[in-house]
Image (cartoon, rainbow over all chains, first blue to last red; front, top):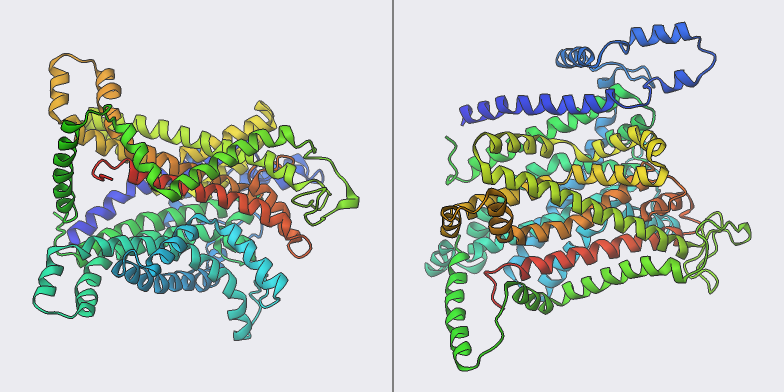
Length: 314
Length: 319
């Protein structure tokens, strides 16, 4: 197992190097100037502008800049934001708690909703509950989060005036903190749980027909026990894998919801940085997302091996 | 694994049953596509989805021709008017007619969806076919590339590429045309990987079948082997994923436009209309609800069609 993990980690290095090259290349070869604001400002004389470019290393060729970026990234130096002149890693760490609170709790809510609904739906296949649940899941994962978000604002903020629609980090009152998180968490939870319900249901259905279930029933186990002790335990193995695989996507996907409710998370930092041509921040966030995707791929595979003794890694 | 057995049993009994029917009463030959269509028709929600999507396509194509209201006619007297007889879907902050804008925007949103799907399916099928057919180093290299693309964080990249490159493309190819192809290219270019994997898996399975051995021994050329003999056999899952990818491409374009990083303000795609509506949610919720509903209707209907196709094209299912 350790050898397997080691091999996977090693083989992910070239993937990550390639990804960083792609992202860096896109940023470096873009027609716009990363110093757009300076370039547009007529008060800055050309010599000063050249000096700034030189200080930031922008007058060097792209491959050299890439190597410099990569070595300093590995040393933990992620550069400074052009826009706010704060180290990039500190900027990201500032946003992390909000992200973990909003996006993390939405994923938790989604899982807590999806597993019971999916299991019940599979156990009572073709019942009214199953039909309602599958329809809900189908609609939930077809609706884009930007529309459900806007709809939530219209209903709960504009019409009913129950919830604030702008997220404020300065708030310390726990009641307000929960209230302002309700809508973004709700939107994300709805979307993520819908996809999960479908998956839990089909995974359970795959197991309900297995021989070992018949054996369990034949030896006289109660229906409830068969489902919970036998089917659920096996049916959840692929679900755990999916949960690990989906985690990075949940954080990346939250970009839109954060934008709607003005949640100051990493996603909205990314969008603001893209619009400000804040290259170091964009590069760092995009690459961190890529690392998360690759890492959780490995986590998912390892979890699968740990949970399912039929899977053997050579 | 276990579900395969009941299926096979059902398949055998159904096959013997149909043989007796054919013997007693001759009927026109059943084709694979005919069977699929019959199964699809039984799927009521998929049929409804197909009808709704067709209605949307026809509506957006014919609508602006029949409904003679300019999408850019500004009328400040009727700013943010709720739906009425004069403006069936109301007006926006500039008094522009929402129905005209929703209809016109739908053309672009749907066109982006279909074009991006065509692109991702073409690239995915080519990569998967080459990878699966030739194997060895080609396969290895192509699959490594696919892995890298799958690990790319697609939403940030989408935003990034379009933000950085749209001005350049708008200058060289004109604002509408350049941005259209940029968006289609980026969405398609970040979406071909699942298709490639499906096609490759299909090729690996079909390549070793006896009829392929027969084809090879008869001296059938490489291209003919790929396109005439193997590809039609792996088409079913590709069609399903292609259908579903139209929906996800529409969502991707709407997301971009919603974040203000897609089409420019004068091209009212559905996502762009939602973006415009964001600041007037308290005064004019209809500005958000109608374009949003259109996106949902389009995506939902496509997903139901995809779901129906998945069932209809599965030859193990005998209805």
